[in-house]
Amino acid sequence: MANVKKESSSRGGSIFSAIVIVGCIVVGALVWRFIMGDGANFEGGVNTGQPVQGNYLGMVYKGGAVVPVLMGLFLMVIVFSIERFFVITKAGGKGNLDVFMEKVQSSIKGGNIDEAIADCDKQQGSVANAIKSALLKYNDVKKEGFNSEDAAETIQKEIEEATSLEMPMLEKNMTILSTLVSIGTLAGLLGTVTGMIKAFGALASAGTPDQAALANGISEALINTATGIATSTIAIISYNFFTSKIDTLTYSIDEAGATLVNTYRKFRGSLKS
Image (cartoon, rainbow, N blue to C red; front, top):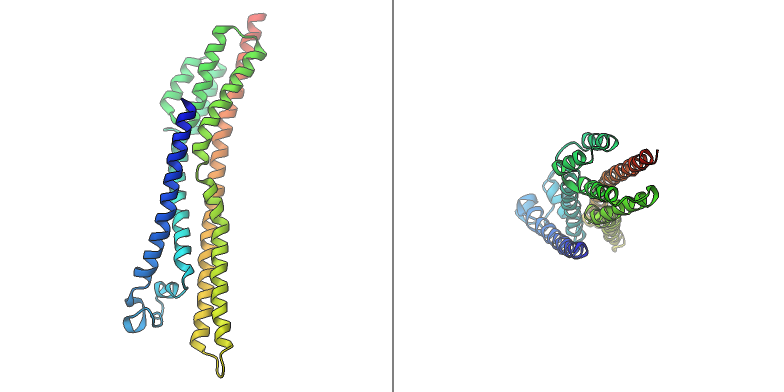
């Protein structure tokens, strides 16, 4: 049942990611064509003219055909960052995670397993679900009367299985964010190269160099460079931020599991003495 649920969630996530990627590219192209390319942004009222002085929309439009791709990549970073923020925040549960962990660990150390389970039900989220699964296994182990080491292994295995079910949801789309770091830079570099080709083409023209074409080529190169750098910068900040959040959630589960195992060992030790 868990594997079916996991596969279904994976398929749903893949469809969502594909829709977002295509949608962002389309929206980026539409923004570039109809908003940035609006005649009001250019001298003479047509986008074939020079941008109105100080009009950044027109300037970015003149960045060339790579700009809509970069716009799409930029939108992807924003959309996937927002999506990860809500998912990872939800995974932490309803209340403050640090307060929850303190209460649960205190309950576990005091042997109040039912109270810890009740706290997990109130907290909800991926961390609480994984810890609750381990707590329920703890109660089962106590009833079955396993020796300390067998019980520790059983509880630890339950924690690992519960974590493995929760982690794909937390890490989903993180690969896309990390990929956008590189793609943003490379797409910006591609736009830079095409702009410089146009600039050098203007210099290579017979007679006096076409100063307008030269300026447009250099402008295109710099616009693409700036857009690519901005996209990659936001992507890497988002990726590192969410990676840190996921590591914190995983550590919380491991910490609670270690406390649970140690508590059971003390419990078995007290029975032997």
